[in-house]
Amino acid sequence: MSELKEARTQFRISVIPGDGIGAEVVESALEVLEAVGTQYGLSFVFNELPWGCGYYQKHGVMMPSTGLNEISTSDAILLGAVGRPDVPDHISLWGLLVPIRRAFEQYVNLRPIQLLPGITSPLRDVSQDDLDLVIVRENSEGEYSQVGGRVNAGTPDAFALQEAVFTRRGCERILRYAFDLASKRIGKLDIATKSNGIVHTMPFWDEIAIEVSAEYPQVDYRLTHVDALAAKFVLDPASLDVVVGSNLFGDILSDLGAAVAGSIGVAPSGNLNPEGKFPSMFEPVHGSAPDIVGKGLANPVGQIWSTAMMLNHLALTEAGSKVMAALCTVMASPDTRTPDVGGTASTAEVTAAVVDAIRG
Ligand code: GGG
Image (cartoon, rainbow, N blue to C red; front, side, top):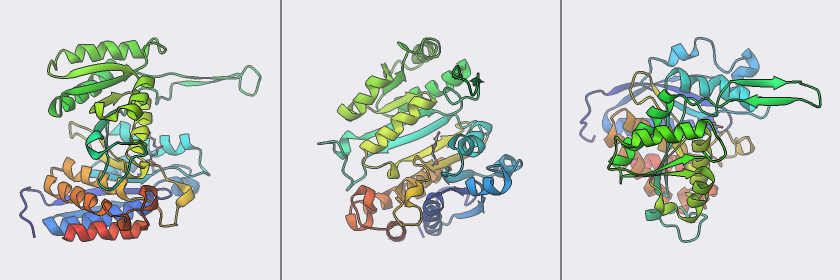
């Protein structure tokens, strides 16, 4: 057994496999956690919760009314995926993921983008050195809002209104987090905006960004329109290091970043409450992928990488690094990669290879 530096050894993890391939990739993550736990003398107590679209079809809600309370005392939450074709997406998202993010003030959605060894970017000539960036997505407000409604329903004059909510507190805290992260990396920050077309919220966001920048003279920052930034992800990803965006812009850019890194199947995320007042939640960026459920095709890397992020967040950094090293070893060979990243292995085979690499 490796030497353990951390004082705490027992952790309570709320596990929400959710829908579709969520259950398959969460099973992989739990196997990996058991393996790394044995290696480092850690024990994880899992509270597995059957919430999601199946629960909704039985009970009319995505999770029980006591749900948030039930998971509030855990050390972290591990989530798979949410969404099923028989439940409207806005119901599944606003019934489970969004309430957890908001109730637990998980205002940072941290989404690292890296080209793992062995994986080829769809972009010509992009190497591992060219692609190592972090997207900081605002996760508690912005364009994801319930403010709005429909008028004149069922008539030719029908219209829908959707308001975006940008609060000073919300903008300041996410921008400060991004500047802080940039100052700990290479001192470079791209801030997504669209203040030419969106004339109220985006100029407000830009003004706050400029104010916050005064606290970080060491950070070289650029406010870039999100469309130009999207082009930069494709044309010059090596020029990016930390990118911060509103809820919607961060969401879209992180799928683009994941695609540039080879597959959305490998992309991890952490929904963080940086103050540690509430549990943080770790989930792959991908959704429930109903088209590949039960076929053994789901790439478990995004979920396993999210689990490594969870270990780091719990200050189990040796264990987190071990999982990442195992992932990198396993990705190097097509025999232990799923087909979305040019391999031939099944979800179970990739997982077994990661577990073997952890056991060393
Ligand atoms: N892995 C979680 C999941 O199912 N994500 C799908 C999704 O659409 N998420 C929306 C969001 O992150 O806001």
